[in-house]
Length: 380
Image 1 (cartoon, helix red, strand yellow):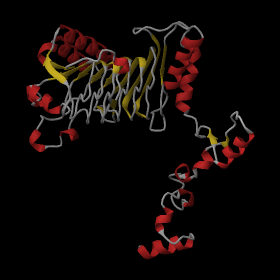
Image 2 (cartoon, rainbow, N blue to C red):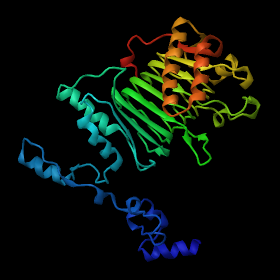
Image 3 (tube, rainbow, N blue to C red):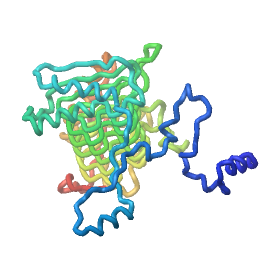
Image 4 (cartoon, rainbow, N blue to C red):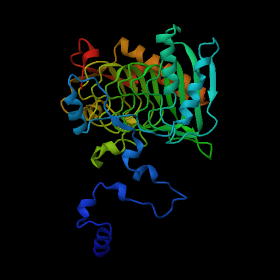
């Protein structure tokens, strides 16, 4: 193999293979092009960019030449294919303030190519409110309800920057960045129905609800790492539960947790209910808000197990529910029940109703020892 590499390097006109590192412009796809097109991975970056000299006012003529010699350029956005599904949904913007709730089911299963679903529509709604005098929106208002099912797994950024009045719901799962910087509305990732009629998955990728400020978010399955990092005011329910009783002797608890590491990191405000194993390194840097965690002796999930999962140095306290906590859990689980019923999961919905009714015996709460005076200025 070494001899072959030497020959290829020589044929390309180079003396060392090290000189080829990063030279993707020399790559050429020679097989399986009919099954997988690698063009976007091996096309030189310059072909994706519009580059032109910077055209800025200068005080002296000689600075123009100096700027050109320095190679200063202005880069325009990458020329990437438009996100067709997101653009189609944005076309509903003209109807959302008509006084009639828009309910639309996407006609096909979504996949990794369908990124930022709902975000363009949320942007159109926000611009109409800012520049065109559209109604500002209320937490209980629903302007449009978008459903994605059929085993869909939404691409990155599902429901990112969501706005009041917009409900986006997927039955299947979603990738990274769900609900990023969300400003209102509802984002739900629920289990989808497989070929046997069973509900499966409902999981999300990394950095779910990153910086989400308002609205509600629901996840029926598991969550990857940094779940609700920098949560800043939104309400969240993580519905996944342990598949088996917790066994700390086995080690690597992150592998079996329902939130896979560093959940609620840098949280500044908001409320969250975790129905299963919160996972390791939880609540590090948390300065505001509340997290309500489940206890269940059948799962070996008790106060000691939760304490073990808190981030080292996390300045938080684990305590019994107070009156405010009971109301928070009832409120969040009530809205979670609405999402379950909307997808025909009546039995699961009734189980959640019973759980909320006995919140005091099923939950503890995690709160910061010292709440940040102004969570809007908290930083990472």
